[in-house]
Image (cartoon, rainbow, N blue to C red; front, side):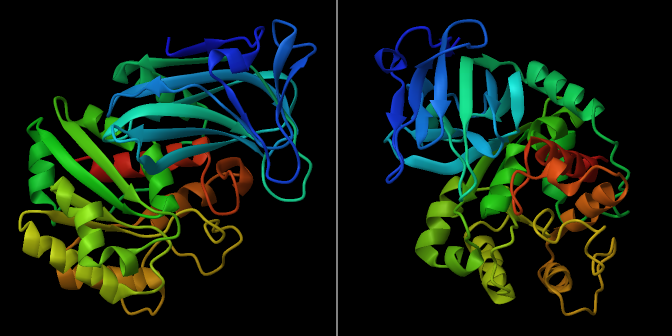
Length: 371
């Protein structure tokens, strides 16, 4: 067990740290009716941070805690490398409203180059009142089969994915597919913004590994919030975010490209010049403010090859540059349109997916990579 506490002792003596809000106060350790004892954490301002715990890149972890709260608060996983550099591929999870003590479980991956991590429990943002009570925190490493079993159990409680990916896919990533089918390792870099980060946080790589026994996906998540290839095309940034990892598959996506198709083309061409065997995958937008087809009349399950919207422009770039095309918009939208749960069920905020939404994204990717 990497972390285990019921907060019956002062958490500051166990390495927990209360970080105040700059203007409005400090989170508390309080007495009262906890889940099983008489003390718990209370967060209406600021956040509580756990002591450091060790992280192994590529390993999977299970965080569980009991909570009650108004809703809109969050639990977060941060990780750092061996030189204490913060790894931008973090994991945010909103905590739903609950009047009674309720258990929440989060599974997450150790990021590439990660050495240490922390759990954070925080108040939400905005003017809405927030209050979160937290008790009985446990964190442990789990095996990949255990992580998969947990994902399968969660998926069984969701409507099934009905999206059918196109025939003839994989034609532009033959080396990647050959390695998967042969049970080899594949180095993948996912490049983009917080949307790509959330997409990566779903268990897609272990779902795909299960399709191809023996295969191992070494996943590097190279992201920065609100950032696209207009930034990554700079040679220094391209080296830092892509080339130094020598990816065999470079996945480019997100919603922060600023309409700059030529910047994406530049990243593709520079990467191929430096790493000629690297294959390229371009993915479309998925979730976000316009990701619900039931309220977005412009959504279509098919891309218009002659259109002038971003999806059409990206499709034409894939054709021109010989890049693989993963239409996450079609997979996500088809799923959302086929069921009757509110869109908020899959979103932690208007832009980002929650654990339900990330699992849907992972199932779309799994379906795409099936032979």
